[in-house]
Image (tube, rainbow, N blue to C red; front, side, top):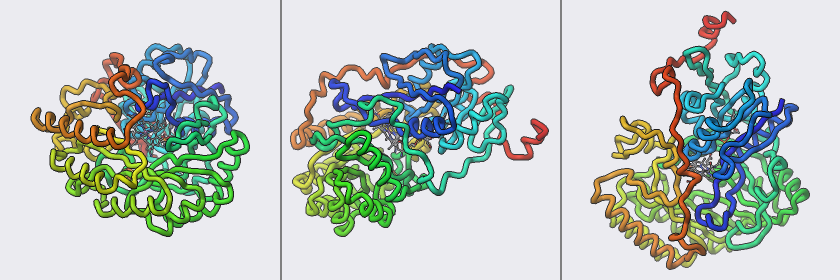
Amino acid sequence: MKVAVIYPEVLDMARYREMRKEFPPFGALYIAASIEAAGHDVSIIKLNPFNLHPDLSAFEAVAFSISASATFNMFLECRQYSNFHTSALLMAGGVHANLFPEQTLIDLDVDIVGIGEGEDTVIEILRHSDTRDFSKISGVCFRKNDTIYKTPARQIEKNIDRFLYPARHLIPIDDFVMSNRMSNTNIKMTHIMPGRGCPFPCRYCASAQTKVQYRSGGNLRQELLMLRENYSIDGFAVVGNDFILSKSNVYDICAEIESLNLSWATLSRVDRVDKDILTKMKSSGCFEIEFGVESGSQQILDAMDKRATVDQVINALRLTYESGIKNKVFLVHGYPGENMQTVAETIALLDKVGDWIERVSLFRFVPLPGTHVYKNAAQFGIRGTDADKNWDGDWGKYHIHHNHHHWWGSDKDFENLNHSFNELQAYVEQRWPSKYDRNILPEDRWQNQRQQLVKSDKFLRGHFKIENLIPDQRKMIWGK
Ligand code: B12
Ligand code: SF4
């Protein structure tokens, strides 16, 4: 079959004017690899403001890979205005579809939504494209007459070494081999995903408490060897959640890749590093760690359920610096409860540890769909979620770049938040100046793109019947 996998391209908002690319869409690339290996003819198509209505009429199946809620509007526009083959099988999956499967099915008017890990699901869906009887596939949601059926959840794969490498060869090289990405160097590099999931419960994070899956060092080494041979990379950056979850996995990876002489950067929590692991990481080529520090206020860290202390932040940054690895720090401003005092504590922390830090990325808090705060919005006094009575249906606002939305608190709280953000930003900018001018960023059409949703009367929000398709029901409905 001719299959199109559609993903939303998003540019690096910090370097928007240079049209600097973000890294590749791993969800789309992983399922594309699987589809290709099953013998189908796959094309990967990106949506961006210059290509929102691609002509899809040549494809017998289309897979929408909705990597974040913020990009859902782009898919809506594509779905409404692109040409599709009259009998094309339309599928959706990805982060947003995993969170809102039924709603995605309806809003995007697709035949089926895959929930969770997609490598095997997508193949099974394609196998049933003739009959359109998806009742025996686990981890899907589909519509039959006026009812939406959800099959039992798919067990996630225990051995992800079995998955094929992402189908990078189906996208232009410039979309995944870059030389302007790694901490102010021009190292020719690409991105790689050593594991999935995170057991921690941070309340602002949509990956919290997801099942952890590791790849072995040997499997990672093979992928890196292939990337070095085919694309002459000299380095790589880790994509995903926290790299150091299982220390034995990290030791295994370091031992396997040491002889490759690649420079690499990764992410970590502050409570996961110690002198030994840092020494091992350094000797296997690690030159930068990006730490999720978030705040210098213990009160805010606790409110976030970050399960980390300010002392651990100081310790991690010091040890990393002493081991010869650069530190990059991520900060989040404006989590519910943030005030002038907590921001002053963040600035005081930066004062203390600033000499050890190479780069800082500062974001404003956004209640991302799928997070604890989003699901419990009322408890946090958060407005603007789809639980609101008069919700505007705009998923495009859940993006983290230059987001000035008033999410919680009174007007006075918001005024103080804006004031303290400006102070923190001024501190960060003065100490770690960025190379672009914030004032000349164009409007972010990537995220603001929004079209009025055309919903059929029958399937208005909340007015459809949902059944969980357990085996007995299956029998009742289809007599099988
Ligand atoms: C890498 C990453 C990025 C990268 C690359 C994004 C990309 N294009 O993939 C960059 C830096 C560009 C990025 C940007 C953004 N990101 Co981001 N990102 C991630 C991160 C860390 C990993 C994503 C990933 O590769 N996962 C691994 C793949 C294998 O999983 P997957 O995408 O879910 O795909 C699997 C299944 O969903 C399924 N599947 C996928 N598509 C399909 C299709 C079909 C038909 C089927 C059946 C199955 C299927 O199969 C896949 C393989 O198993 C996640 C956190 C996380 N761990 O998931 C955040 C995350 C997805 N990002 C998030 C956000 C908010 C954003 C931004 C909106 C930030 C912003 N700019 O404001 C943008 C949006 C960009 C975009 N195009 O989606 C949030 C999303 C929350 C939400 N509800 O929206 C997350 C969850 C972060 C978090 N912890 O909260 N991101
Ligand atoms: S912020 Fe990091 S540690 Fe916390 S839940 Fe998300 S991925 Fe895990």
